[in-house]
Amino acid sequence: MGKVIANMSMSLDGFIADPADGIDQLFGWMGNGEVEVPTAVEWATFRMSEASAAYMRESMAGVGALVAGRHLFDITHGWGGTHPLGVPVVVVTHEPPADRPETFTFAGSVEAAVKLAREAAGDKNVVVASAKIAQQCLDAGLLDAIHVDLVPVLLGTGVRWFENLTTAPVRLEGPAVIEGHGVTHLAYTVHRS
Amino acid sequence: MGKVIANMSMSLDGFIADPADGIDQLFGWMGNGEVEVPTAVEWATFRMSEASAAYMRESMAGVGALVAGRHLFDITHGWGGTHPLGVPVVVVTHEPPADRPETFTFAGSVEAAVKLAREAAGDKNVVVASAKIAQQCLDAGLLDAIHVDLVPVLLGTGVRWFENLTTAPVRLEGPAVIEGHGVTHLAYTVHRS
Image 1 (cartoon, rainbow over the protein chains, first blue to last red):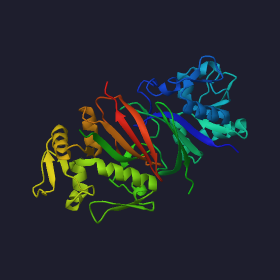
Image 2: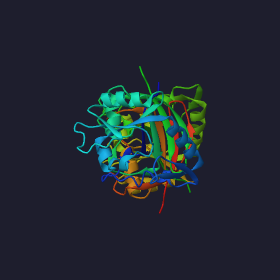
Image 3: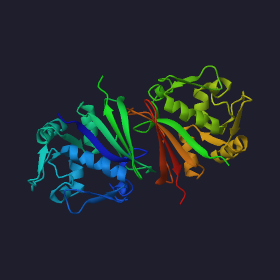
Image 4: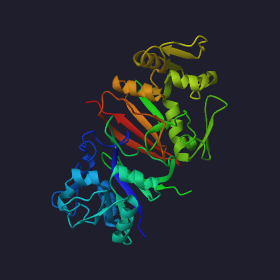
């Protein structure tokens, strides 16, 4: 069975976006290299360092479904209909949008969302791509791993990845480290006591 | 001339102590290995992984003086009179204690403290060992490097290292990465634009 992995780009001081949801300071590593990493959509092709590209290709090959929050779904306008990863996306929301795109599934809780995503993913991994949803998954004991793309910047303010955890402290194992250019990939396993 | 380096152990979610100033969850890597690293005091001998020990020995050999905040000085009771690093310590405080230990110097601002520490350090590095003081040094453009001993735990609450930065975003370069056991040493350089 695949793993449930939270994965985000994070500043050294813990932010995954600036106060206006901007990610320019955090996603530079996806475009600062020579090695092309195509995605499922034309509007997103990454150009990374060789190390990041190898890491990214392996990660992408292992992903079977994505769980995202409603906020992320809204600010990306549903990724224009297709998520770059090209996998089924389950959006956690209490009120599914009226014009419900066929390519997305909506679930009322993280538990339901992870269950649906697991079914869709089969043997592959489920990636959780929203800060709040990742927090809720962690609190619900649903996360197997946390993969941080740690970016060498201090944002000082913005949206924190880890906040309001109700089950902390949470012990982690690892990380496996991949050194990219403008990013350090840190893959932690959530410790089960 | 030496560098001014902020160095602390930090949880993945950015805390350098729990809400009661506890550091048990963060300093485990200093005692979880086989390699002994003696300090200047009898009450503190580290036992680390080989990688951390090598990193620590090199760091310790390069340190010529320490800048600490008054809070840290107070909660450690002035390290019993001698800091484990065995170097001159400059404490930033507006009101020096009445019984002023001879082994410490007191300064009224981070600027004054770093100046005194630089003089004491000679060609060696100045290490800044308090979260708030490191923030103030960063804001004042006094920091050359940030060395994070990143610990695989989410504390959820506590004392944050980076908070209330007035000059953010701050771009960093690196990091140089050393993988220890229960810790990842990340040595960043502060980018000067």
